[in-house]
Length: 277
Image (cartoon, rainbow, N blue to C red):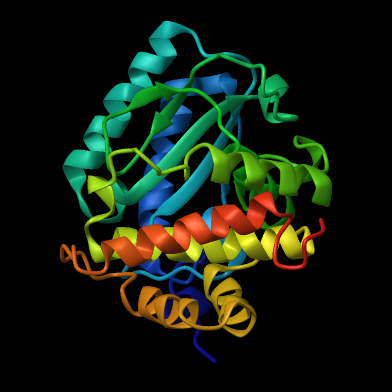
């Protein structure tokens, strides 16, 4: 046995460690920056998304983070966060693939569709901004509450009210009718293959949620959808799994992707594959 075990094992890994050291370093960098920017306003920082659901893919995934704050952040704190996220983007690597939402405790507790407030969002694909809540924020809360990794702060179950199957299904339907209502919309953002894969796999996840009242990883939802949907949709699901990290533009298959989204929305309007829920 070594005289100093730390020399053999290296520094202890944090309890929230993801299994990807570079991701862990980016999250630790974020935590340090947020703690400095917010001080006592910081209540908790949680990893959700694919890291929570267990389908994290370094080739295609971002790192979804929810930050709980004591109250609505004053302008100086928001400006400090803006500078932090600009620095993270400039660093590149995983620091630039952090998707961070900041919510005060009163707002985090439960989703209010009448809430028109704007909350800080640091995203990997656009500048730091103030965003309004949408139905998908219910899904994000569910993942953090049920499967989130606690980087710092209390158990998220203490901060987020239970989200039952009915509320989850309602959020999915609202998302499909709103964000995914693509008829007549500009769909140029879906031209890259990885974005088409995102759309198809999101539909698989949403349809699974409508059937079962819960969320699972996108690969798990895709496996279920392959069995349930049948041709011609099966081939599109299989293609989406292959395309998750392929950023080439593909206009040839875009009409099929749009048809898949429309089909999923139609099924949702009819109550899902079983017609219930």
